[in-house]
Length: 314
Image (cartoon, rainbow, N blue to C red; front, side, top):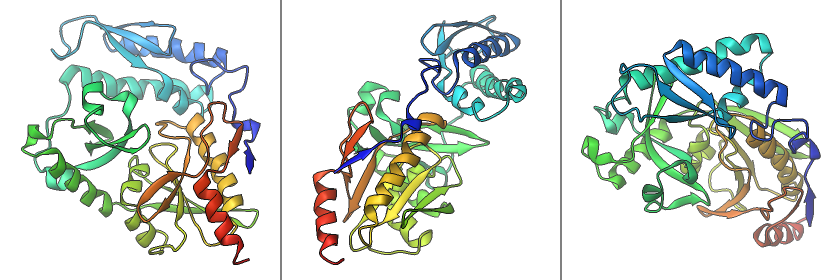
């Protein structure tokens, strides 16, 4: 069975090839605003032609860990501003560079003083982490790793060496999982074609709550040990999309989830994974094939077998 992806989830041809949520004209405007905002904060900025600014300090006031040049990607900022009218962009860009400038002036936040209370685990693309660290950590699903992190005053700090605060990596992970279970979700249901999909949000750690899916099912969806499993997607950091499998509505639910997930992954800040997973007995398997073009997506063998089983009860 093939699921044809809605072409509206594909990048518009008129959009910038790198800052894909913006047109070429909007991308140029964002780059101008970003360069100006950096200059106002003592940074010489130059667009590198590859979706990032190259930053250099104008003075020695910045933290000693600031390398001679720093690449500051604009992809997430482009995703943020794309949802607002142009008149709001200067304020949004200024807020972004206020946070960046503060970090460069004062350095990263110190290690947590109470890691048992403060640590969370954060799903993070492996490609964004140092290769020597990423290769030593198991993947949660292909391309995503769970990293100990803290969140304070809107800033997420990832802690790659728990020894900085007297913990081993397993101890930090256990503390992070325990605190993830204490978070709560905002829940919205989307119904289409006889299928119901749960869209969870509420924090920058919502997608990471997939790491404690049993708690999410029990406390947010009021479901325990679903007989046929769950479809799950973590398109961006602040979204977790779920469907509890009960019958053949799993097929239209999967199509709906693909539309929601691909669009969020293409457009919203903090992209993680565009794919849907079938979760049974705490095992995560792809619910579909994962083609590069995103156009013709087929059900995975596991999902086909599940549909065959469910069909017997119709």
